[in-house]
Length: 76
Image (cartoon, rainbow, N blue to C red; front, side, top):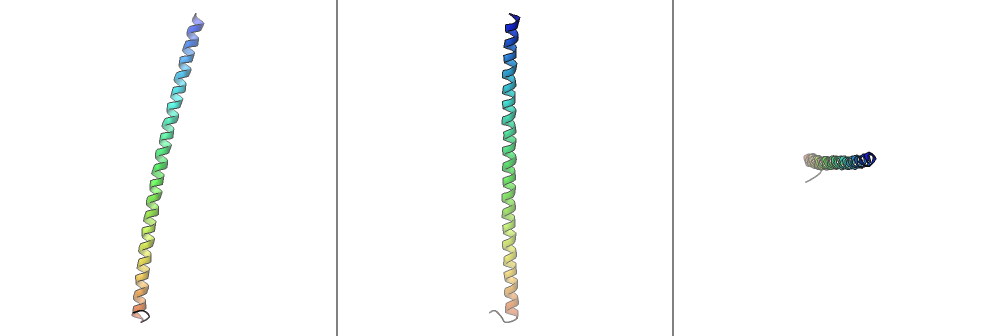
């Protein structure tokens, strides 16, 4: 009879341990997903800012060369 009680207790402990591992795995996956999403947002923002800087620099360079061309009579 004591053996049956120990077997039941063992099964309960194993079941609880499996549930805990499953919950920990789900929590870890959630953390990974959030970190991935945050990283992707940061990369998207970096790409956007970089493209805006490139566009602004290109426009400034174009304006500068246009001004030089007009100054020296190369452009009208």
